[in-house]
Image (spheres, rainbow, N blue to C red):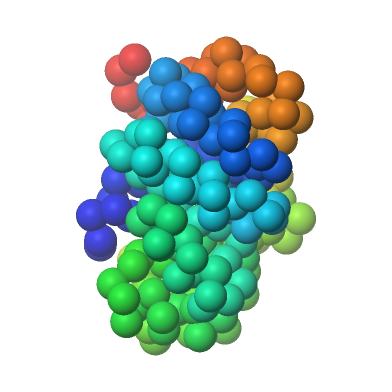
Length: 215
């Protein structure tokens, strides 16, 4: 397993961020670090994504920064140039996957069916995004589709929150979870960075309890 993916597994939680104003990015990075979570997935759901990645990676190079909602090779390239160290896609796009493999950039494509998991395995990928997790049946579906694929780890994303985070993390096939509730767009827009730090701390307490780790 690539070291970056290993680190994400150690964190157990990946903040999934949609940010409208890149001027807020550095303060967001500071809030996440203050909460004890030095990673973030900045999604291409807003026009500010690449600029926000650059701002965070410049201000806080210790952050393990990724790009999410990557739909094209061009977005993957822009993300890496802006400081992203891993790529997350909502689905399995062989063009994006091949580009990442060619450039030695860790990639976790989205999967939800055995066919998609098999396609990812054929590319040598063993850490995959399970998306949209809750909308596709949540834990029962993940248990069912993961059963035939020993050695594959999943990052459930979509509908993950403080109420169900522990249930997902207790599954042996779950590598980490992606969640947006700790970094909601409105919290960022309102400048509520102290609240984000508190939400991160509370979420990490859930991660530690679910994994039987000491606080």
